[in-house]
Length: 567
Image 1 (cartoon, rainbow, N blue to C red):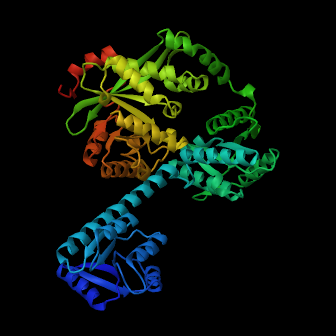
Image 2 (cartoon, one colour; image 1 turned 90 degrees about the vertical axis):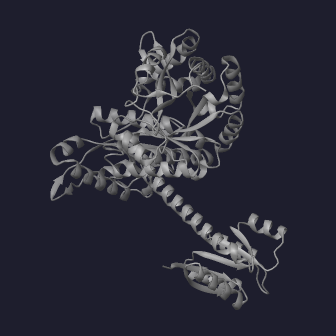
Image 3 (tube, rainbow, N blue to C red; image 1 turned 45 degrees about the vertical axis):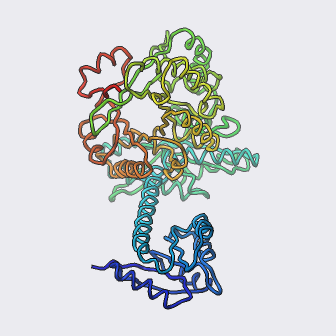
C-alpha cells in the first residue's frame, strides 16, 4: 500500500529530482511532484496548491536553498523544508537550520532520506494538530456557544484594550450592561431550547444596531455587555441606548410564537466612573440593577448605588490588623494523582475569620490587599504558614499568587526568605499563577517565572482556559503544569464544548511536557472520564473539600486516597 505525498522539488537537475522520486517510491510513497528552479516558479507553485514537503537543492544557477526557504516563510507556510547538497559543509548546514530548515541531507545519502522525511512529516502533522487544538480552545474559551458572541472572558479583554486606547487618545468610552426582563419565564414556559433561540436572536439584533458589532458580548444567562469604545462625548451614549431599545421593540418570533422583550441597561463610563476593566464592569452591573429597581429602562452609575463600597473601605482599614492579629487562617484541599490514587499535593486557601462578618473567602479581601499595598505581607504570611504546615509530609504545597505579587520584582527574594525561615525545600512549593496575571505584563511575568524556576520552585498556570493564554505561548514559560478551570470540568459530561476544551488542554499540555490538573472534580464519573483522557491529577469535592490543617491530617489515614510514600 502506497502513501500519497505532494512534494515540491526545488532543483535544477531533472536527473537528481528523479533519483529522489525513485527513492520515495521504494519507500512506499506515491509522490505527486512538481519541480521548479526559479523564485518565480516556486512562488507560483506555492500559490497554486498546498504541499506536504519541500526538498530544495542548496545551490542552483539562479537560486539557492536559503532563498527558497525565505520565500516559503514569507508566505506564512509551515511546510517541512529539507535542504540537500552534493557538498554541504558544517557551517552551511548550521546556517540552514538556523534559518528554519527542518533538516539537511547530502545528495546520494539515501539511508537518511526516508527516515528524515518520515520524521518531518510526522512532526508537521503534530504541529498542525496542535494549532487546530489551540484554535479550538481559543474559539471555545472566547465564544459563547449559544449566541456565537464573545463571552465574558473575551469581553473583559476587549474592555481592557479599549481603555488603553482611550487613555492614549484621550477620548471617553462607555460600557453598557444589558439584562433581559422576565427571561426566566420564557425558559420556564417554552423550554431552554427556545430560550436559547431567543438569546441568539437578541444578540444578532444588538449587533445589527451598532457600528461596531464585535463590541457586543454575552456575559452569561440573560445578560449582555456592550462596549462603546470611541465616543466623541459621553452624551452620545443616550442616542445609542435609544437605538438599542428601538431594535428590541419589535417582538421576536420563536417557532411561530411571538415574544416581546424588554431590557434594563446599566451604564458606566471612563474616566468618570472607573479607569480599569473590572471596576467598569462592576459599576455598569450596579447601574443595571438600579435600572431594574426603578423600572427606568436605563440608569447611569452613581457612587450612592454601590452599597459594597463602604464595606470594602472598612475591610481595607482592618486588613493590616487581621494579618498581624491572627485573624487569617488556611484551609487545604488535596490533589490526587489519578493513575495511582496517591495524594501528591495540597492547595493552601486563605480565609479571614472576621470578627463581625464571619469567615470571608479571598475574593472579599485580596483586592483590598492589592489596593493598600498589603499584598506583600499577606503573601508572606500565607507562604510561611502553608510551608510550615507541610513539614514532614511528602506533599507539594500550592499557593496562589495575585497579579500584583507576580509582577513584584522582589518576589523571588520573598520566596527565598520564606524557604530559609521555614526550612522547606524549593521543590515542596508550587506557585499558582492565573492566565490573566501573565497577560497583564507578559515580559515581566516571564522574567520573574524564570528566576523562580531556577530556584527549583514548581510553577502552575491556574484556571487555564478562562483567560486564554495559548499553550503556544506557555511553551516559552518555565511552567510545570496547567490546571483546567473547574467551569470546564464541571460541564465536560454534559456540554460538548467543555469536553473538547478539557480533552484539548490535556493533549496539548502533555505534548509540551506539562502535567495537567483538573479542578472541580465532584463525582466518580468526572474522575473516570478524566482518567480515560489521561489527565494527571484531580482536585475537587470528590476527593476532599477544603479543610483546616488538623482535620486534614486526621483525614489522611482514613481517606480512600493514600499519601505518597516518604523518600
